[in-house]
Length: 460
Ligand SMILES: [Zn+2]
Image (cartoon, rainbow, N blue to C red):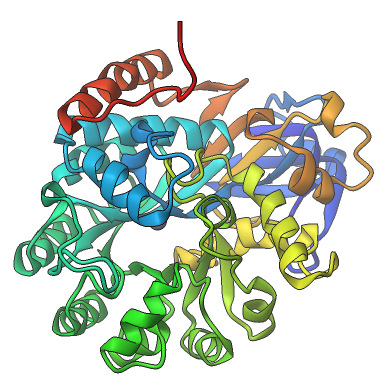
């Protein structure tokens, strides 16, 4: 395939932007990137796809996703965290069947593809959502994914004991065994696009002995680990109560930090924590919309970046965001950093774009394979249609993408050299069927959970 007549944000080491350019794909990889004439002359027998001046850039990588939460979008708006989790989110999720888990993952994948996300990290896939169904959807979607299977042995949340909904509780031995079984069955599936990781619950949900076991098993298999860390202030109190300076110090002491580890949120972290992340190559996944909605705090992104931490971006979930549209969150990541630091220069458009692409690729362990448009890299990219009022004029394409574009402006998605969406039509998943199934299943889950969901205003 040759995409002709594009503007390319390459994200190559020189960060070049090419106008009147073309990108050629051979098999799963990018064969050529350059000015139109050079590329077209190299492949004279290939009929190019004329994009009419679209913008081509690396696919977005969402480093913190709960696929099971797409179908409970909006079930817990405007609530404090404990009510949010204890009265709504866990009650809904604790009533999921494996068929609900599969249907929600399909809805989530569809939304991600339609907003330009090409790779993601699922952070906490519970047993009851059905690993095989979700993995099958991930492979079928054509996306690149790391699925973190939940591991836990305590039903607490931070220092609140016995808090988890009974439908969500798993025991340590089974949750580890099932993670390893899923790894053996699915790791490397979909031509290597699927990875299986450990997704332990945050400190308070896992005993220290089980963390030690997870670190050892992950190290032996070079498996990734993803975990929520220091999302809310209570997490600091929990770490102190078990004898650690911070949740990051706890994670470090139990072998959880390293280049194959992605920690979501990291809101309540300090310089000593950042040094640990930087020294170990740990990724921090910044989730600006979720943190803002739940009033968790604004993560210290400037400090982490200055300390040399790999900071990537995540949308989190349907009840905390409430969408999986990364482009909305690029803008929020920058704007919130300005507000936190009282300085509009700290996280410019270029930095958020790096967080959503190159830094996300590093989080997945794929920095040599994806995250930029360079010959030899895997062809994971998106095309954005700039011909819209809200993106006119586009003086600087980087600013236009970071601050103006919506997910619905993404026209085409290519992953591993394969067309996944063209002209906004997803080619790997059946959109009508997935949306109607989610519409059917969501109220049934709410009914089983005994929840009345709907408008707080009178509906006539
Ligand atoms: Zn989360």
